[in-house]
Amino acid sequence: MQQSVVPELAHTQTGPIHWVATAAALAAVVAGTSFLQPDAATAAQNGPKTHSRAATGPAPDPADVTFPLDCGPVEPVVLEKASGDLDGDGRPETVAVVRCDAGMGTPPSGLYVITRGTDTTAPPRVVATLVDPKDRYNVTDFTVRSGAVTATLLGYSSPEVPNCCPDEQEKVKWQWKNGAFVRSTPSEARSV
Image (cartoon, rainbow, N blue to C red):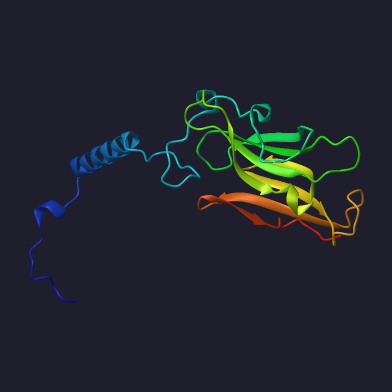
């Protein structure tokens, strides 16, 4: 065994005072970190801090919106609505299934996302059309959960198929990603 050329240093000898000093330093570090916490994590990137729902007001009401839907002499009717924070900004959005109020038949549905700006007194507005009625879909099994919109779309294989009898079915999901609603097929979807 080779001996060290450096003589033993006095401060390498541990004693009770060294352990007390180490424990005090460790306690100071732990106490200091309790004051230095990171900001709360949010799904929104580079956006404002998340606020509580009570502070941002209620979800927008579809009755206060003019939908981009041409119904001629009849009015649009909201069939279903659901609310949730879809873009992670802390403010709730409302998603509404809307179609023309026809006396007979089954007119196609539109699926719209409604929001209001940071000014809660401003009227709500449509910010996204997830399903356009021009595409001849009927929206069923509609939900808003965990920041995602899911629905089943009933459609038609050709223009000759009557509106009463859709012959195609597709489960879809929309989620806010990189500033837009991205459409996908949910993992539990099965074809008919």
